[in-house]
Image (cartoon, rainbow, N blue to C red; front, side):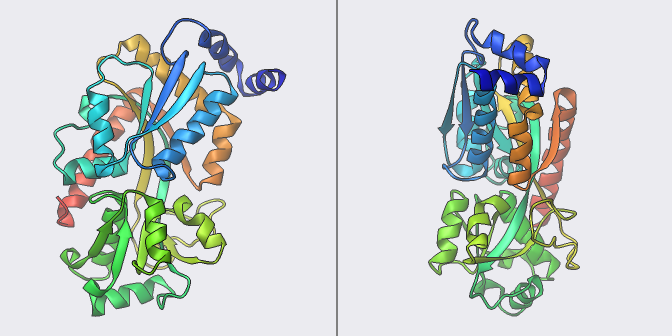
Length: 321
């Protein structure tokens, strides 16, 4: 208990107050459910477990639990959350993947049907190939696309998600019609890695962290990353640095159930604000190659509106919606 208290003091007085309130009443301070609308091991699952680690380390809730609800680019989890009106102890991971999937699948449920809480960080797309691939550089890949686009099998996450969008953006940059992209959608980054290692895929697109272990082991080679500028702790060149002017942020955020009170929303915002201030979260941002883009309230709502419009434009331009 002493170590936990010391951790609270280091981060700030607000965390000490959070610990006191965790023992009172019900709601997120009693038990906090963190929903990852994807399979274990992927990007949303990683974000949920990093949040869980910070919450647990500083006693921001009595207990925490990560719930995985995979399928359809996160829209299955979104649909379930939208049916849990007034449930104030649940936070669901969301982001650019879900924004794209909502439009591609013509989902009846959108982010307008839940309660925005916070944008936590931005993740970026890595494009990788097996270590023995003939594609040594992004120029090699783009040359292969120009010659026989359908012969290059690209794997990534859900149809319409950021992996799919970024693969289409790269193909478009190579001068090839995006309708000729040979894309295979998988439930998560772990399955993409398997497809690359067993020979079923020529190219993989996903969050850098999904590939980091296999890159370090020498089994995969990264051709580039979708960030606008080099990332701390990520030894992979951006596509911009390589003369290909394409970037895409896979932002990570959290939303809550509809129908919660303003007080309940404020309480959830306070919890994620304290998470954001912890050393655990700062280390997670560095370790996972994320960029801190934290915002809550009206600023996050404005971002959601602009991001929905932006992803819609990209999807339409690439013929994905």
